[in-house]
Amino acid sequence: MISHGKEIKVFAGNSNIELANSICGRLFKELGDSTCTHFADGECSVSIHEPVRGADVFIVQSTCKPVNDNLMELLVMIDAMRRASAGRITAVVPYFGYARQDRKAKSRDPISAKLVANLITAAGADRVLTMDLHAAQIQGFFDIPVDNLFGAPIFAKHYIEVFGKGNDDVMVVSPDVGSTARARNFSMKLGVNMAIVDKRREKANQSEVMNIIGNVEGKTCILLDDMVDTAGSLCGAAKAIVEIGGAKEVYACATHGVLSGPAIDRINDSVIKELLLLDTVPYPADKPASDKIKYMSVAPVFAESIQRIYEEESISNLFE
Image (cartoon, rainbow, N blue to C red):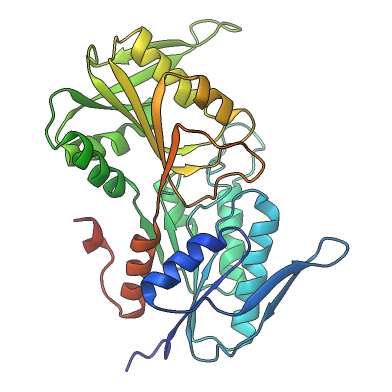
């Protein structure tokens, strides 16, 4: 008998109900009966409408826009489950907000990623399941187990089907030096070479100068990033690959499509042929659809991970 919970129960906040339902479908479970609303003054109100005593509870909630509301929903749901005597509580956070504030970039900066980790732990979560943290060291901010899944294998499977493995006409490109390790691992899965877009300001108040490290001339390039927020960096890198590097065409993929502000207009106006995103963050409801943006589901990976966590099996085997 599994000691930590007599059964799996999956609940969800308001951030990504569609993904939560897809995960439940893969687990052959019904989504847990709960409601997340707000009082007249904006305070979060959570009600759980079924017993969870002794259950292995998984709460699916991306901390995407509106970030603070979704984060508070997650914290209050965790607290409600703990007070209802859940056997174990796992916060399933496909997109972990505040992850970009993971260090002090200048004096008197907060380290908000650590603060959010403390809040989730203090609320009563026993473990966290997430995908493609902006910085891998954020796992160390938690005092509870953290399973960080990877989106690159999902993209790799897709592009191998499209271009084949080991195609000499294809190159993976890192949009900046900081994403080099992620791009290197991705290129190894595809069996192709990689390049790096190096950007810097040579003088104050002058625009960024971009150089391409690697020969992309005449190649089909795949830009890989962990997230697309305003899409400025991604579209700038794609432009440099074509105009400076002489690439034939540019595809792009990213795990988290935050798509803030002018992101969609920039993508539509860019040289990017197609942007492939995962559904860790839902498409903005207030933005027009884009023919260039396509989605793939992470539900199979999260459902398999939830099943393995419940059965105390290794998750790392998923990516070997």
